[in-house]
Length: 226
Picture (cartoon, rainbow, N blue to C red):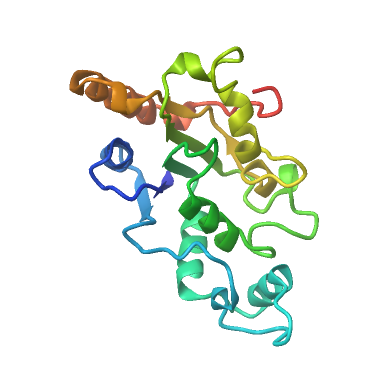
């Protein structure tokens, strides 16, 4: 299996960094090929613009989807985007490792999606959901929260985590993962790692590694029902 692991956290020594390294090491030890993108280490620019492209369709008005289609047809994506696209295209399993910030993706990860999930390469022409460009691939969100698990239940302080993640898993009108054809696996959630002891963090890493060792046989979830 070819895996692709993406990290969106500015501190390498964070618990997100530990989860990221655990995923890479565990998957490689199991015989899988692993590509990786530590977005902060790469200094990935999350802001879209003409620098997304080496080609130009309309020099007067920037319409990103029009330029994405033109770049798709003319090998015109900037090197940083082309590199990330090829990692996705080569993978069987993609894992996003990130902290849940303001009930969503960190800005650098959202910007990575904005720039990399380009029309023509990631979707378009009716190639969405079951007919998506990346159908047959699987995706998994591994995330940490600031609060404990009870805060993210349906009657909890922050509300249902499943509802918080649904826009990422599927989205309203325009989704991300399922929209582009991915089968989505159940999220890996580490509740409030800042509140955990060293022993509890070690146990959480061990649980993550154990799951990854059997990830090839894990079924996808029904996002609409999740």
